[in-house]
Each structure stands twice: as C-alpha cells, then as structure tokens.
Image 1 (tube, rainbow, N blue to C red):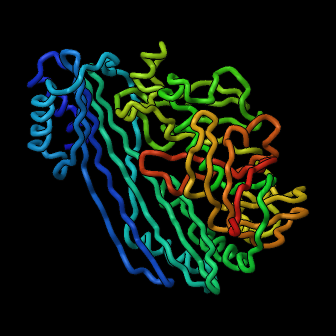
Image 2: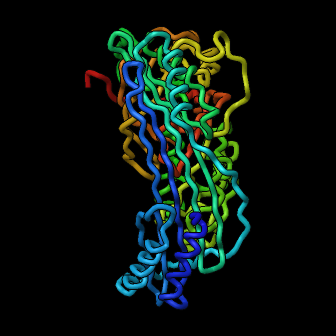
Image 3: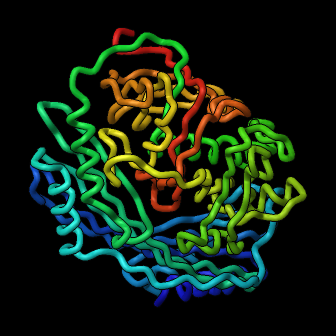
Length: 453
C-alpha cells in the first residue's frame, strides 16, 4: 500500500480501538542510494529503503505519540500492532492542556513522482568529478534521496507528497592539502560534478602555505556553504514559534531587523513538500521582506497559543521550524574568467570580490554552537579553506580560525555589503530540510581565535 493509504489505515485502526479519539498519522517511505569513491576509484555502493510511522492520539485530555519502523510496503499487521500499542498506552500519558486538535480536510497541491539515481548514473557523476579534479587524487560520494509520505487525520485530512534530492560531496588532494566542493540539488540531472571537481582542485592548489591572522573584526565573503549555516541557525533559534512564545527569539514582526538586501522565504512546495506532519498544507511564505521581519513558523500547538494559524511547519514534536528557509539571491551579474570557477572562489561568490579592498573568503563553518539563543550568538570554526582577498584578488590561503558572532548582528541594517546572484542548498541538510543561501559579503565578522590560541 502507499504511505497515504497506510496513514489512513493507521488512523482508522486507532479510532476503532479508541472511539471518539482525535488521531493523526504520518507515514514515510525513504530511499537513499550512495556511491563512495576514494583515491579516484569507486569502492562502495549502498542503498537503504525504510518505512517509518508516527501516530498521535488524543483522548480524555491525554495525548500520546508513538514512532516505529514498519515492515516493507507499510505492512498492515505492523500498522495494526502500532495502533494497539497506542490504544493500550494512552491512559498512561500525562494530561495535555495545550492540545490544539487535528487538521481537517483541506486541499493539498499534488506533487510529481520523483526518481532517485541508478548506480550507473552515480558512477558517471563520480567519473565527472574525478575528471574535473584534473589529475588530483579525489574522494567523496554521490548520493540521491527520495521520500514518499502520507498523512491522515481523524478530522478528514488525507494527503500525500513526494520529494527528492541529490548531492555530491568531494575532496581533491594535492601534497597533503585538501580542497572541498559540495552541492545539493533537487534532481540528479541538476548535479554538476565536473564543476565540483574543478572547484575542489582549485581550492587544493590554492591552499598551500596558509598564513595565520590575528583575532579581530574582518570583512568577510561567505561562500554559500557558510552563509547557509546562518539560515539554518536562524530557522531553529530565530523564526521558531515555540521560542518566540517563550521570549527566547530576537524576531519582532513588523520591525526592520536585518539589512534591506535580505529577504527570507520558506518554500517547501518547491521541493515537493506540500503538507506538514500534522496535515496542514504548506505554501511559499515570506519570513523577512527586505529586512523587515514578517512572521515566525507555527505548528498547530504554537499557533493556538499565539492566537494565529499554523504556517505548516509542524514536525509533530512541538518545535516548529521553517525547514526550507532561504535567502533570496541578489541581481545577476557577470562573472569574469572561467564560467565555472575563478581560482579557489566558487562561481556563486566570485561576483562579490569586485571592489573588495581587504576581506576573508570563507568556504564553510563547522562545530558551531549557540552561546546566546535570543541574540543567536554562535561560536564555531571555519573549514574547507579560507583565503585573504586584497584589491579584489585572492592573495593567499589563511589558516582556519574560531569566531564568535551574532548572526542577526552580522546581517543587521548596513552590515550586508553584497548578496550573490546564485542560491545554493545546504549540502549537510538532513532529509527533511533544504535551507539555502547565496554568497554574502558582510562588513564585520568577529574572529576570536587562531591556530595559536
């Protein structure tokens, strides 16, 4: 049976055992196919095909949610067993005065069937990455992900959706220096592994003899992989309806809190995600409009508490997050030189170098930790290459640094000097999220440590 049919069957099975109960079921089939390569040769093909279910029931003032894996094809016996567990356990659940009810029937836009990738297609992508690396030793993976999900409620809602993504993540190595390139797109056909290999090789060649810079405030150009970390963190800690209700978010709708060049839009339907796990239809929504905060994300619980409506961001865990939030790219501009890569600079960031007197080019962040949730002050490290830009030119590699920076502060009015023309999806996103960002040129970034301490 399909995930949508399985979800409807789960709701019916629980309602039969608990007459009058409110029930919502979300059932998903996810497929992941991955080809790994090392030393410029494929060494592993793996595949995973799994079914999972989450069923929530509310009756007599109590709410219970159970999650479980399911046997292949949404096995009916497994669904009946899960329904029995829900019915038997609900009386032991605590009282739930914040229960907001289930979603009722509402139209959900249809999504197209999405395909993954074959081993032959991924092998061809690996070959293209290796060719793009131009003789350097190459390692990494090519991956495709596909999800088919269904949601049903006792309020009459029944919907299905299908989403997919493909990614390439690779390293080119020269004399012990690694150059990294990563990207994530909607379909395998959109991947450009040759360009990814060329960029990884360019970063490796330009990464030798890295110098150390002292702590201080620097103008920075964040490549999309770094900029998108800001977006995903703001989605969790800023535009989160639960944190907003608790007074732990910086977001104040109606105020100009970010630079006018920053517009943030959440667009789940573009990825085939047309309904949330609670059954609320999703749509393209604006969270920041030219620097002005517009709204926060709500699920059914937080919306009821705020006197608002769900924005379709219910994961069923009480923490609404805009899972497809992205910064709108800037105007298209020409890129001088090679159409794919300008030295170690990704094409998405190259236009921002024009007119830069002195700045740091940052490839990526990692090990980031939030120190102050309300101000979204984060500490972390740079990785995958950093370079000094002077007079619009790459002057040389810089050793990785530690930073401590308020993300809203970095994007505050007057602090954004440029927005790149191409938005890129976070290559590290987990399957349910697809945050995106263009490259950003920022006036000030607080470097608090280097290799010496």
